[in-house]
Amino acid sequence: MLDMQCSVKGTASISALTEYPDSEAAKAWREHFQNLFKIKHYQILFSSENILLVVFATDVVLRNSP
Image (cartoon, rainbow, N blue to C red):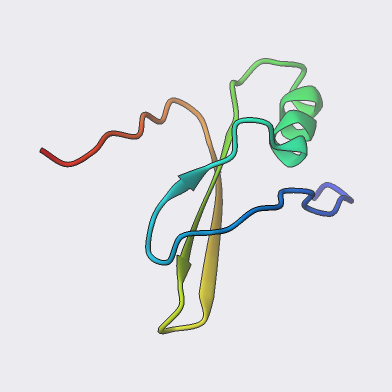
């Protein structure tokens, strides 16, 4: 949809949901929608299945389990 490369760098924790607050991809989505939505960038790595799930979402709050 958007012609871009993901610029997020860092160490992804295995099987842990990670938020990227300074994501250029999320910023591009916000600009695309003229800041109508507050889009956030998340990812989770499932190494046993060799799957990286990347999510762009709005109205999400991450909390630790009780």
